[in-house]
Amino acid sequence: MPALVLLGAQWGDEGKGKATDLLGGSVDYVVRYQGGNNAGHTVVVGDQKYALHLLPSGILSPGCTPVIGNGVVVDPAVLLSELSGLNERGVDTSKLLLSGNAHLITPYHTTVDKVTERFLGKRKIGTTGRGIGPTYADKINRVGIRVQDLYDESILEQKVEAALDFKNQILAKLYNRRAIDAAKIVDELLAYAEQIKPYVADTTLILNNAIDEGKVVLFEGGQGTLLDVDHGTYPFVTSSNPTAGGACTGAGVGPTKINRVIGILKAYTTRVGAGPFPTELFDKDGEALRTIGGERGVTTGRDRRCGWFDAVIARYATRVNGLTDFFLTKLDVLTGWEQIPVCVAYEIDGKRVEELPYSQSDFHHAKPIYEMLPGWTEDISKAKTFSELPKNAQAYVKALEEMSGAPISAIGVGPGRDETIEINSFLS
Image (cartoon, rainbow, N blue to C red; front, side):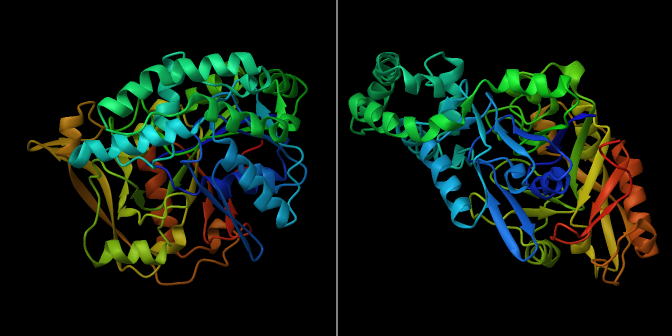
């Protein structure tokens, strides 16, 4: 049985939650391997809608064990709040596993995140202000706080004091903010220790054993390929690696154990936050995509920037992730357009460019070159097979598949769990 990585092939918000949930009934473990509560998944089960921020989508599947891997940064208050909210709605969360090596987001991380972003002014990145970047920075600087530190008070005190020695200097002298009391931070973190303890585990050992035993393990990325800190539109990126390689480091599983890598593609393109976006629309079409598609960030509540499908980005995602399949979502949103533009290449300095430029300056100046594809007016939300789609919708999917460089194995035709056309099984 396979181990699969499922990730966003654009700038995030592609519908990964639905794709993960769709597979949940056949999967033994679903693993978040990076990011934190700056990500968000919306999952619709029957007439119930769930907004997940930190928890893996598999927590909604009764037979599945959800795992938060070592590559995730965890705000303990958010984690406990999200668990409580699901418990109140009758969702069993008792099987959750949390890596003892995951780093903790503390109050001083969120403070630094917010004041830094305000200080940047027009140069701001567009962070969520939830402390994600500063937590990853501490991890790399080796002054981070890990889940396991909650269970050694002496170590915790030393680490918090060491982290605040420098941060308090910055807060007071650069940002004119009051210094943070290390003892109060320690007390707040210790208050979470016993509540979190039942979930803490050696997740790397558990996951490797599960794969060796033939269990199905799904690694779920947050955000998307173009937000990867190494491979995205830097500096307008997240602070971790949502790409496929991040699954190995963020969960402690070697690359030879991964069987398939599935990229989630929206039938058009969206982005939240600042940064270049070649196909972005500022007209009635952009507003229509935003309204019909319900394009508002699950975590941030911000309106998403909307544009036509960008095949250059899709090809790039195929390359850097080694994608074996695509899951195309929100095809139904495009119903009603007489013609649908698709970006097939860019014009940069008068030249046609068909691959994503490595230069940020070139990408910033890229102008989309469109190919027009015929649209459709028929309602596709009830389609159960590819042949039941209108001919023009079929042609649109086939064109995107050819341009993107990997087969489209599933198509979302509505928000519901059952509103999906499966062309090829991801679990074969």
